[in-house]
Image (spheres, rainbow, N blue to C red):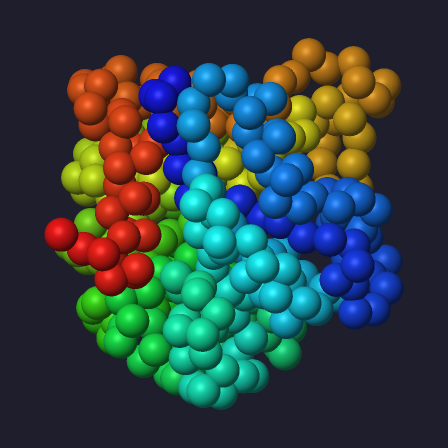
Length: 320
């Protein structure tokens, strides 16, 4: 591991931020977030325990779930932005107005926005990127050279033609913003990003984070078409503190986990599978991809720290 690591994709939340009880469907999809806190202190404890040695920073944001209060979560993150290890993105409420978006980036100290399909008042399968990031938010992001952490919607992931068009549109409308394609557009297998990379690689303000992504070929596809300076290491903690791995079969993305969950596949006997943490599988995939594509030590250090540091400095107005 490099001596410095900037985790560009980490969630923090408190159960006290709940605005209503989760539904049965929400409970079935939960990673345990409805029963335990994972605050800023927990995040850095987890990072240090999982990867002893490096000095850590993190780009953090709340958990974008409909049963958690957006403002309470943003307030919690804002309270920790005086910590030099913590850089914050605000959960983006698409119903808020331009004044609220401006306050988040100026008064509250956030470096950008974290939109999410669950925060849009539409059935999930109907949500588009345009719904997630309204025009007023785009204007503020561009004006402030902000970061947009984009989790693409729709079943086709980044291979969906509409998603490709709308990512290109977003980068074009916000040329001063830094758009991060979370989980390489949810490409837990290489096929998804292979369909999109020729359209996306020319976008100079588009970055790719590998949080919760554990497929070597997917990372190779990105490095084969885009410069290493666009690749960002992230953990997606606390989700990746579970033991398991992604499986991608016939374009179906599945969770294989040691312990049985409603959202995963596992053995009949819970705990029988010998699996390590999801975050270690991300590190394994990155190490293999770096070796196969010939990344230098300095380039690997950029992926773990320097690349994210540059877009954070840009959002802070501290560009050289």
